[in-house]
Length: 347
Image 1 (cartoon, rainbow, N blue to C red):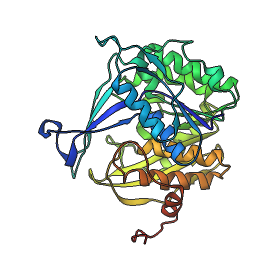
Image 2: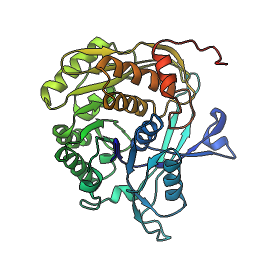
Image 3: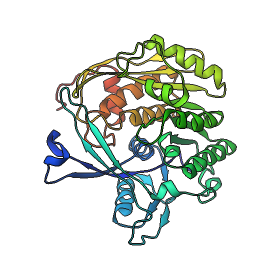
Image 4: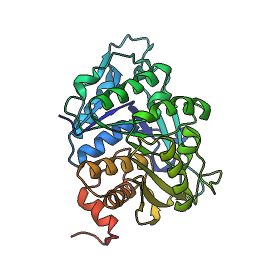
């Protein structure tokens, strides 16, 4: 039995060290990452039994991704493996990251065309078996953005999870480098009837579903919670099967300093975490995935809505303090952060 099943793409992540540009460097830091795998890894680190489902080419990069998941406590036995043909008609994705500093934003370059997961076929993954006795299924809008077939299998997975009585969460995760807002909305609107918990920030809700928060700026910064509440209410009215809507609110002051807060709407009331002011960033990639992880962990453990948004807020704030996509914070550290605990050295 799995507490959490996640489905999506993971890539090899290559990062330029010491805030350098990629063209400056003579070496790169390597790890793995990807929205749904990040959630599975984080939830496993928090103590849940998790599984990650995907499709990978059987070469060094595929085995690296598999080994990284295993190392961090995720069941990787449900991967569909594709033989490596030596030519590259199917491949595993890569992404390259330059870390921002001061007024310079971080920058991601994707190299994921023709990836194995983009060629996944309906019926190829045995969802009935995977969801047997499972408790939760998580997916993001990145996966259906990869290809028409990936979108079809994403919908297939959500429907199978719903039929099996498995709770579902969906992080809208709009990526302009993968598809347009019109394309995203055409696909995402069809997913909504199969989702229990919907997650996304202000850009995600506008680009992926067509709901705009009042006061949204071009850079999606300094958004007031009250204006976002109206968006959440409109989403709930449009899709009444959605039980909860969660979001992260980020005010990116510089490449190093952000204000961070999380919000949860349970269909009746709104719950806000504390504000993490002037959050010093080591790496902001995966912050939203950590919010999803913390929220799922809390709800599966029977926490109240306020407790859930507080924990997810503290846990996701801590994610920004670690390099890489994954969150290395413990439950105790997240609980201390959400209570505004001391940052003096623990001795």
